[in-house]
Length: 407
Image 1 (tube, rainbow, N blue to C red):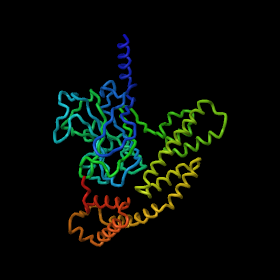
Image 2 (cartoon, one colour; image 1 turned 180 degrees about the horizontal axis):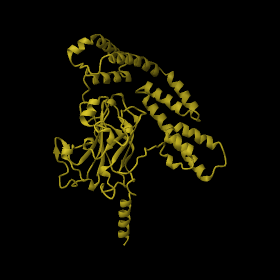
Image 3 (tube, one colour; image 1 turned 60 degrees about the vertical axis):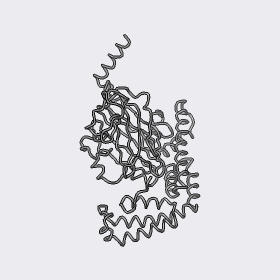
Image 4 (cartoon, one colour; image 1 turned 135 degrees about the vertical axis):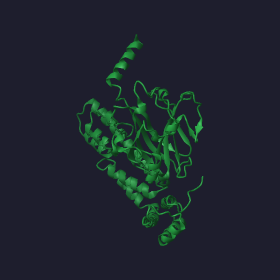
């Protein structure tokens, strides 16, 4: 009888659309992308059947990318996220058959990190291959780059095979069996499976919204969300706007007053700890970057100090910024950065459409290329380990003037 009642309840909710708005969060964690393939077990709440009682196979997949740390050469890489289906679920097919080198039991969301729209048009990466009227909101169809501190939101249409591998000719996928594992790996500009020069850290949230549902972007600082603070509307509003410094300022202002109820006191203590933990994490990331890229670390610290203006942390962050500014590593990095910016500015005078692998094209731009070569040689001699040299090399590799490094 209990089973019958449960089935009747599910049937009623499906018929009335009450289940339609239940979003499926597939991934909500920090990940580190390096060489090779990475796997995660799906959350325990992930249904075994993606088609009923809620049909996720025809929904919209939203991915929130919060880039925490990335090297300069990561912008030329492509990240591929996706999932594997359970063994034997693909209608009797063996687990690892291949066709044109593609696995039948894998769905991959292709996410290109390169400023070449040709690739998006050619391969259907992100939303650029889908008609704008098929997207829930064209403004959400941003193309992410591996830039530390940046946050992006991409939208992928589950019913559009062009967003997934294998291609439609190798489908259909059996979503009635759900998924087995989540997976990710990165490819370099030559399509080799490999990682950038240093690990890329990001917090990724994959939310699958079924037909009829609505999407709310995740907002998280120090492990809490605005929903954890129902009695602190000003703090929650600042968090919703991704302004943790203003949220902490509001918390500290409220803590200066007495007479709050017990629930408010508990939420204030929770928010204070979480927001300070978030600031500590951001500061640790800046400090960890200092040896590799002093200028980027200093800029990140300056942004952190500005974000936490009006809080008890602001003065200490400003003092640390002044200390870093006087550091010899920053002075040297600024010299190297000036050389890089001059070379990059010269390269900007050459049209992107110019084929610099053609000797005749090189001859037309010989004056510029000689100056760029001089600046690169200077960086190699005076600043061989600098972020400026790595950035210039990445730029010249993208323009086809120097080869990409081998494995």
